[in-house]
Image (tube, rainbow, N blue to C red; front, side, top):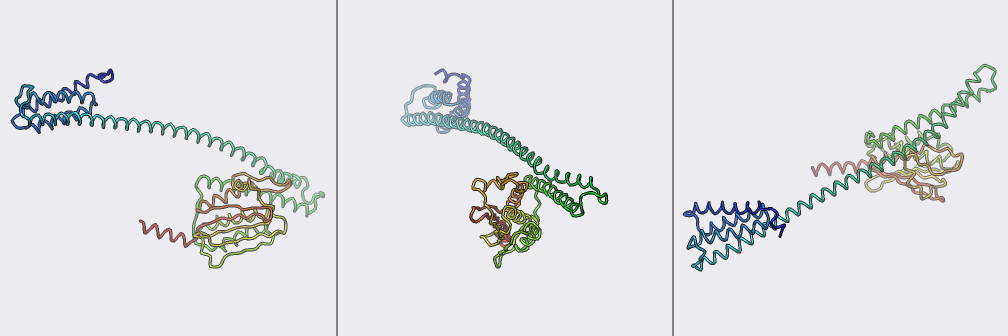
Length: 387
């Protein structure tokens, strides 16, 4: 009850609204009938319900009933109702006024509750968004720390080793200049110079891979797609990998009538080269390496198979992570741990997927898919039709 009368001004406003409607109807008495009067008072009650709620609407209904009887139902200025038709009008007005007022106030209350729920949902969503951002920031920071740790490990190991070799070879050559009667013969000098050349290439490769990885992760990898045969891609990669593949027999199996690839040729050739180099690195001398290309639905699949020791199941997904290198026997010369991460970035930038299958009996198979010209043309034609 205290809540019902907690806002007296609402009741005063409702009474003033009904009074204004009554005064207006009295002034227009000669131009209105009982139906017009009843509808006008119902509108006044409706406004009270919408603006001030059920309590003021109920009070407005009572005032409107009294005014309707006293000022408009004959005999006017009395509370008596003699004509049965006027009784029907009075009862109908009473039921209508009370029902409209309560239903309108209920609709207003439902609307207020819906608005309150909307505001609560927005508040909860904002809290969830902030919590998600904080969690994302924490995860980003964690990954950043992990990346810095991995990068530091790469710098301290992958860069120190070639730098140490270069420094040792250069120091030896400087300490034994040619023609000084030194103990290093021409063959020894050539070997030291070869070490410097090889390790310099290794350092250059590391820098290039870091730059390419940064482009991929930053979304700045520029792809110049054009139709090209899978055989041309494979041959370009084989030529580049000729030195590392020298100890292995290589078989190439490209399916007949293979559609042209719609790719950036240099990037995809680099992916095949990375898979070939990876296969050669982890295969024993003399073990065969096979390159296959075949159609697979709307794409072309290229695979590189080796007969190495295989990859343990727990490492098959992680081999595509930055700086990850599976455990290896001491003395094995591994890469920087970014080649397969770069390969995955290039393949995914083309809309393809790269996977690995491996076991100790059959070695490993790294395969990836890329779009072919036919599928690309069909997608372009479909987009043009839809537009």
